[in-house]
Image (cartoon, rainbow, N blue to C red; front, side):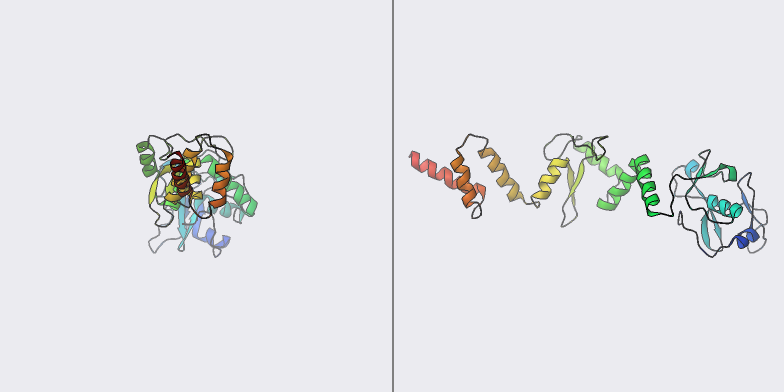
Amino acid sequence: MKPFYNPGDLSIERLRALVNYDPETGYFTWKIHGHGLRQGLPLGTLDKRSNRKTRAYRWIRLEGNPYLAQRLAYFYVHGEWPPRYIRFADGNPDNCAIANLKFGEHDFTTKEGRNAHERAHRAANPMTYRARDLRKDFGLTAAQYQTMFVAQGGLCACCRRPETALNNKRTRVKWLAVDHNHETGAIRGLLCQSCNHVVGHSKENPETLESAAAYLRYHGKPKCDATIIQFKQVRHKQTYEEFMASRQAEESGSVA
């Protein structure tokens, strides 16, 4: 069912010919009788996709098309579709009394309004969007991510440290990133932002990372600048590991 769009073939005259609407109770009932319809029977079903009944919206199907009851109520009373999302003053989305309906904060007739709504909704429901992003990007459920997180002790799989990077608004520490093989899509583990960047910038090449490790180990000891200069001169021909092996062989020979 589409949560916002209004099928354009339902006129206000046709709506009022099909159903009655009580603005005090918010209930719709059939005006017509026959073909499985009972005059005076309440219309609509709660959205079964909702996890909590108190948050479920009521949908009404008319002539094959689904409509949100609150939007139908506004259309019935004012003769035009509401330009924004409809909210509920008492927080109960099944109370479609006209006095209980109010416009949402953002104007959905503009791109800016739609974007502002999405940002606000994402900020208000971070876990919902996180679960959606995990499922969309990696095929993981929130429960599967949490299982991996607990198995790693809440630490990065590479450096064995907790995440310290902050989100863009600098209001909280980021989640550990999901690391996956970009060729096969296989999930490998959870990494902190720094390690995830290292793996990505290395093109996921173990030899590159091993060479970098050898480089850092070597330069953990005081060495003359001439050695560094020599490596820079030949690094396009051999890896740092190969260069250091040749240097060590030369040093061993000179000592002997």
